Length: 111
Image (cartoon, rainbow, N blue to C red; front, side, top):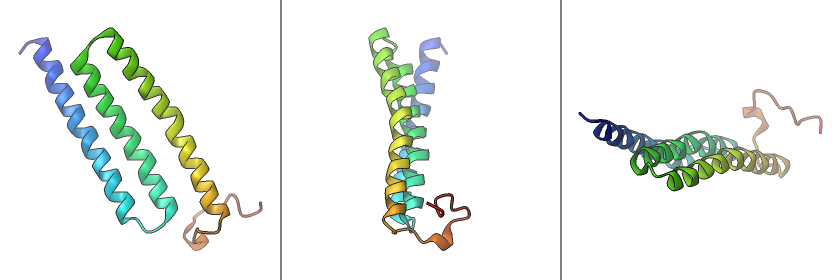
């Protein structure tokens, strides 16, 4: 097996794993009961799924231009998804749409 074949095989595995993580994230959005749980399932597996898909693309494309663009997309995904989820979760909490009995720790209770 040549190096190119091995890279293509690893790319296929990464693309498949990324697609499965993204699917799990979508199913979690539909199945989980409240907004905070949904925000958790949107950020954690979705970001990992996107990063695995980008890794698979990088292994498959191998062009310096493509690798630079893939790196930028990955960095922006890592920078924006958690911040967006934090802001949406805080807005949901402040609007009173959270069942506070389900929270283990309520750090915003005194605010």
